[in-house]
Length: 125
Image 1: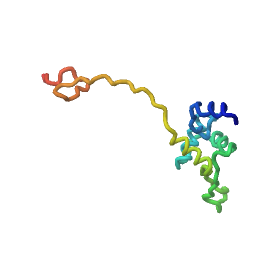
Image 2: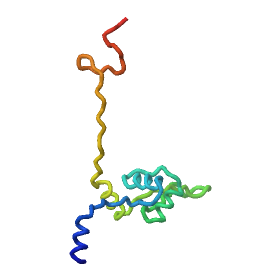
Image 3: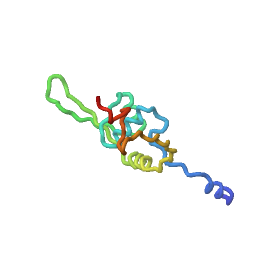
Image 4: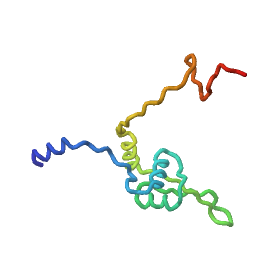
């Protein structure tokens, strides 16, 4: 690497880590966030299959009842591989962009107490 390439690389702003589900649907991203935070997903089977095929989550089969004439009853649980979880944690702890806060309008007060939409709190008929 030449010195000009080093200088260009140093002046370029650093970009934070990307979300592990970058490029996938919003539903897939929300499902991944729920699984990575320890909750069970509330999304469609197709979304979970997409995450599983991409290698972002692992699907575990849990048999509930097997000695029944109706066949086994199965439940699925999902987990995130440790490498993906570490990547997600890096993304979650990245520095956030600062946004300009809008100034809130001053509240109407009487004797330092907010009015809460009342026009005249002292008039009682």
